[in-house]
Image (cartoon, rainbow, N blue to C red; front, side, top):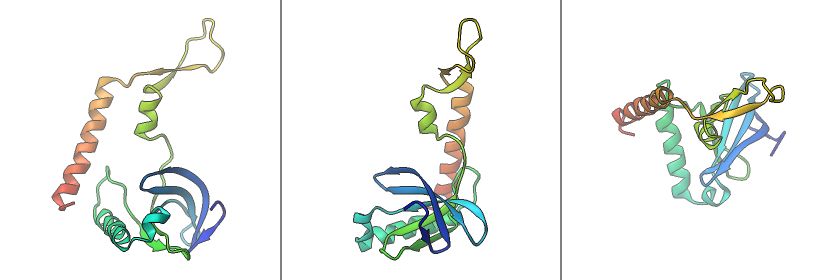
Length: 147
């Protein structure tokens, strides 16, 4: 899929994949901005009910305007019938990546350590609480809209 153009989106790289599809980093050639394209898996793209749920999820998310909820810019279908949604692309690590690496990283003091060496440090409790509050605020906003 890399370098493939779907509608006016040029696929740049794969960001991740899971049970609900594959996410790619892409360039919106009309607006000249980087976006994320989330594709419904091929097996679900053949299921009319799954396609309807996917479109409903995209429409519901696009109706939410909250800093802790990812927006949806557009939905579409490629020539092979795979549904996709277009979302903002955010640089950085996911919470899952941070947790998998044991938290945040910090430089190791120079005494005997190689230059640039880093070590994992658990997230401070106040950061964990702040993240949990942001997640809860996003959920409250979604529930307030019946989602």
